[in-house]
Amino acid sequence: MAAVYKSLSKSPKKELNTNGVPVKKKNKQRVLILSSRGITHRHRHLLNDLYALLPHSRKDAKLDTKTKLYQLNELADLYNCNNVLFFEARKVHTTSELHFPGNCLRGSRPILSFDATFTTSPHLLLIKELLTHIFSVPKGARKTKPFVDHVMGFTIADNKIWIRCFEIRETAVTKAQHQQSSNNEEGEENKNKASKVIKTTGEKGGGGDTKISLIEIGPRFILTPIVILEGSFGGPVIYENKEFVSPNQVRSELRLSKAGRYNQRSEQRIERQAKKGDLGLRTGQERPPGELEDKVLFA
Image 1 (spheres, rainbow, N blue to C red):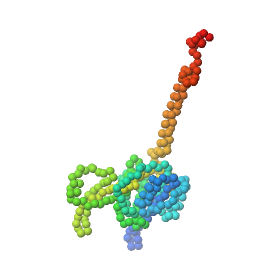
Image 2 (image 1 turned 60 degrees about the horizontal axis):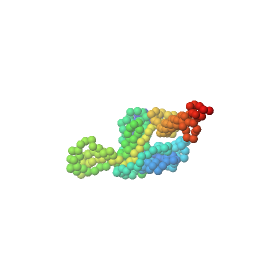
Image 3 (image 1 turned 180 degrees about the vertical axis):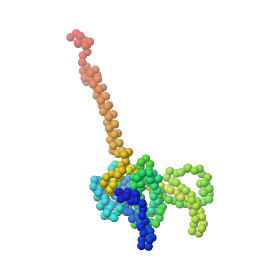
Image 4 (image 1 turned 120 degrees about the vertical axis):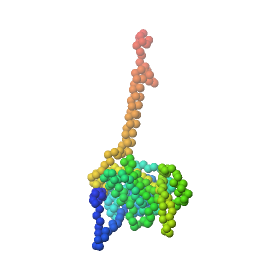
């Protein structure tokens, strides 16, 4: 983590070969994907979706321990990977399964689209660099196809990172459809679909209108940054999210509030029974004789 931060702060320097020509650096990123014990079928589906989207990744068996995370570094060295995507099962909540109409070629390379908010603070720049290392498929990596047919969008909203995947679909547009689309009111956009009409030139010099649309294909998930450590799965904390509240703490406060209401009702019930006992109104209890009763007056 510290090496990534230093590389971002330094100005890039171009390497030159013996002839003085700049050498083009190769992207040699490889990602190791694995999880801890205790994941459910929904988590496995998410891991399989990410593995299908990242042809330069490799899956491994589940990690048996949750405390000795430094073992992940040894696994990464063993599989010749310089990035690790580790999912730890701690009461992860997932939404119901969504059916998206889009599709993309397995093994194709994505276009990464980052929100402008990632450039506003140093920790977001660091997170952007990490996400780029993980989701940027190197050219010529194993199991890759020479196509770019989908876009991965990273957006900051509510102090969380929203990740969505879209298919790039191109369709030919006739003159009637182009005229009809130009007459439609602007601002009507589909929730999972955005389109744009551009003019292209064919191989024989003929031009035409092509409609480029983005159709969501999934998976979609949200990441909440909690802490950033200086080292790989260890070291001092260089960033901490002060606004993060653990879901366990929220559930504990809800249980305490319910327990407080229950204790208040229990005390009221005890006080009510004590008053009934003083008045002799409790079931099965004999009322003490009063001062004006015949037994007391004519005793």
